[in-house]
Length: 267
Image 1 (cartoon, one colour):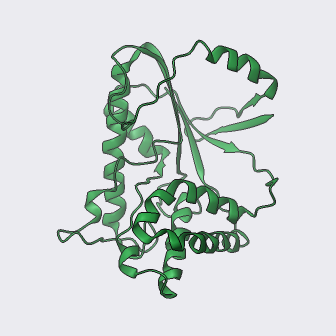
Image 2 (cartoon, rainbow, N blue to C red; image 1 turned 45 degrees about the horizontal axis):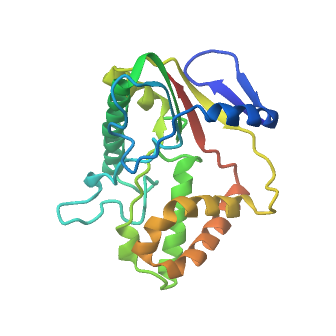
């Protein structure tokens, strides 16, 4: 049985708890026989479907991935202005967070505009997005995820396993938006009326495979980054890289909790 708890961040509403039982799987699978499923090898930010054809749109853990690494992260010579970091970190100049935010606004606005043409009148949309809790870009949430990876790469640089230039030139196309930024872009674009914007807290459970939290985090990040890390740094360093990542994660977690934020956005 899976239980999800939602607590409002923008509106003073009671907590909502949704419980889903595995006994419902057969009924759900039967219903899926009568649904249309489509896989497209194109960006989800632009148009995907004909106009006025979609009744319900659901996007899960996608929109924190930007369409591209922000071009403004590189100077006129193609050199990164975010040296030693692979996302927004504590040592990043202000121009870095501005570049990421600008790319998020461009992408999210395009997504809303595209979906507004495809959804029917009175259609609904639900988005699940990783984000951050407040205005600060560096917190004990998703920013730590990327800081650990940058530290792990820097550790390998210090051991002579890879070059500092490769670390400086690697950037992730990820942006953890705040609730205010999401709401602001929805209101500015104007195609949808925001009904709910809430934090979803997923209950933490012990890992049945016996892995530490750091090992599990390392496996998760490796799954989404390996295809980009391998051609840039070389496959031969990846095992050592993510062993280091997991160790750093566990060491930091022993000091204080690391709590990524997940938003549920309902239109």
